[in-house]
Length: 457
Image 1 (cartoon, helix red, strand yellow):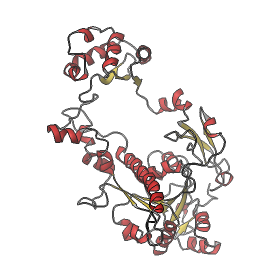
Image 2: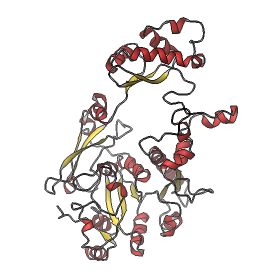
Image 3: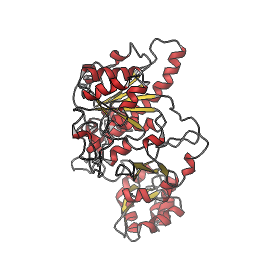
Image 4: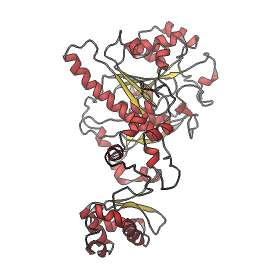
C-alpha cells in the first residue's frame, strides 16, 4: 500500500478514536485488488464501501490532453476530465468537490485515456492483475472498448466483474440509458413516495444509485465467498459477473408491494408522512417550529404513548384501539391527539417524556445536527481527514461519514482522502504492470496517461 508519509494525509476519528488504535490486525479485504471504472455515484459508492476493508483500490479516470495542458494543474481550475463527481455541487478552493474527496477515499487515482487503443490495453492489463472490477457504464460500452468480461476472463478467470446499470445487462430495456431518478420510478419507489393526489416526490439525493452500490458490494462479497468454493471444486473459472440493475435495487426494498398486489389486487398508494396500515407512526409538529417522528405502532407501545400524553381514553374505549389493524380505522383521531400534545411542547420536552416510557421517537436531523451529535461521534461515525498539505496550499480538515457497518475486530477506516486526479498513475503502472520510467514518460508525453502536476499551486 502507498505509505502515509508519501500521501501526506492524516486521520482523526472523533469520539472513540481508540477504535482504530487497537493492536493492528488484518483488515477483512486486505490483499484484494479492485479496479474501479465507475463514475458519479453507483460504482464509486461500491468502491468506497469496499475500500474501508483495506483493499487495494485503483480508480481509473478517463483523461485526455497533452503534457503541457494546464487543465491538469488542478490548483488553477476544476479539471474537465476524470470522474464528473470531482466538480459536482460545491467546490473547494482547489476546484475539487468535498463529496468526491469522501467518495474516493482510500482509492488510488490512475489517469488513462480510455478512448485510445494503448490506453485500453493498459486498463486490460490492470484488469488481468485485479481481483475485482467495478464499472457502471451503459451496457455494451466495456465490450466496445474490448474490456468486457469475455475479453478479460481468458487471462484472469478469477476476476469478479461487477456491473451496475439502469436496467441490467440483459432484457428488452438493457440498452436504455438509466439514471437513478428514472429507475426509482420503474422500481415502484416514486409512485408511493409523496402525498395522496399530488405528483410523486423526489428525495433530495440519488437513492437508487446508493442502493445499487450497496447491492453491488453485496454481490462482490458473495462472489468472493463463492470464489473459494469454486476453487475447492477445481472450477476452471472461479470469477463471475455481478449484474446489478438500479431499478432492481429499488424493487428489492419495496416490502409487500408486489405480494399484496398479487394476492389482493391492492396497489399501495402514496401516504404522505404516514405508513399505510401502521398506526400511529408519523411526523408531528412541536412548539419550537421543529418536528419529531414518533413510532407508537406496537400495541404495548401505543398504550404507553397514550398514557404519557394524557389520552388513556384512546386506549380504554372499546376494542377499536386495542390492536393495530383496528387503530388504522381511527388514524385521524389518534394522530390528531398526538399532534395536539406535541404542538404545546418543544422538541426536547416531547422526547424527554417519551424516552422515559420507552416510546420510539426522535428529531429530524439536518447536516449540522449530524456532525454535532454526541451519539454519532461516540460511535466514530464522523471522521476528520486532511486534504492535501499546508505546503501545497491546502491542508484543511474535512469531515466525512465513518465506516459502516462497525466490525469490532477488523474495523474499516479512512486511510486517505480522495486523491488528486492521476496522483498514482506512475506508481500503479510501475508497481503493478512493471513499466519502466522511460515507458511511463512516453505514455505521459503522448497523452495516454497523466500524472497530476505536483508543482501547481
